[in-house]
Length: 84
Image (cartoon, rainbow, N blue to C red; front, side, top):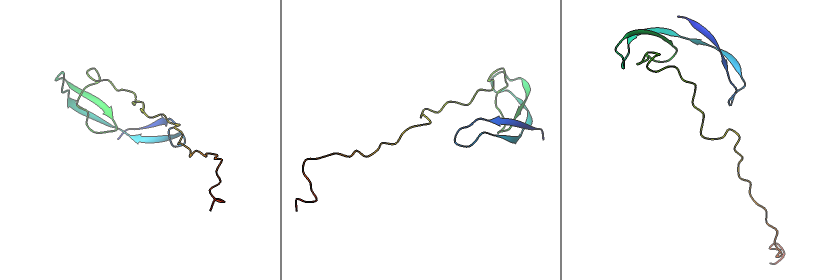
């Protein structure tokens, strides 16, 4: 089984290198019906690289550094602690 060393970008964990195990699949493309060979680390692909080339990971819709809402402190002219 071929293996590759890939560079993992920093998301929520510190950037590091990871070894992934890839397999070479021989299959018939679902779109063009041609016998093809494709190397992947996931499940068996359905399409060849001409019909569906590898794509970059999609960007997340939520910003990475969202701030939580802080409780507001209000100053009042009335002192509730001493009014009783």
